[in-house]
Length: 275
Image 1 (tube, one colour):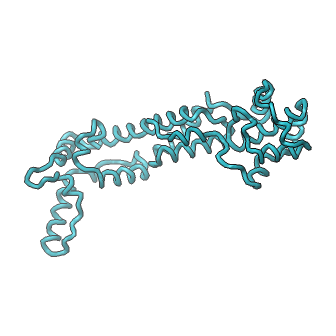
Image 2 (tube, helix red, strand yellow):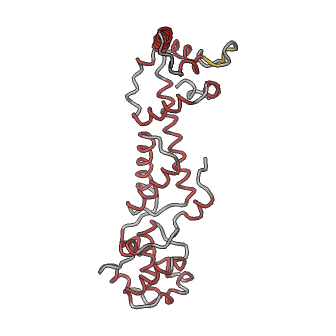
Image 3 (tube, helix red, strand yellow):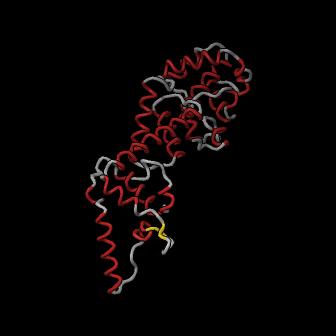
């Protein structure tokens, strides 16, 4: 399921704002090794282009399709370190040299594409986050982007990462539903299913009534509360071993279960309905 907006796709892997001074110094400053590699390029245009691409991949985690699209402040910052004006970059985006520089930067600084071992490591990382919590897809997408940048894995296309997040979330959800659905025995499943139908005389289901905490503090109200506790206890949920499911995921499911209507639960497909 797609969750990114058109604007999020458009700005993914690009400069959404001009880097501030601290970011320029942190990502675009050419240290001794970077300056040596940059100066080894032939001509002012190539030198500035190499430096801009190096800083860009450090900052964004990817290369721009056209390095000339980098903010003017970025180009000027790099060019000034090399003793040039930012205007010397003009035309670099149309040169084949920019692709050679990308490959050289990847080799020299250890950047990798998202495939093989890098793909499996990200998948494992996403699985662990999805399984242990209930973060929204866009939050997982942003965290995965940061994880890739920190590990020098070049950002894939937005759709590739979006589908990966969606797929892994769905797999962990299905694992949760299967795990929970296996806990009740046949009698308990029948008892749970019996809570869902709407009772004509009350226009509500037994599940909806049992989920409402008593508010009557009188003697009869206390008696109703005890009856409710006994009825809930008969369902046998307290005997289920849920230790295999992380606490954060159980908490999120509990919040959902406390608010969803019985009719919506009845309409769910197996195994979600039996959870």
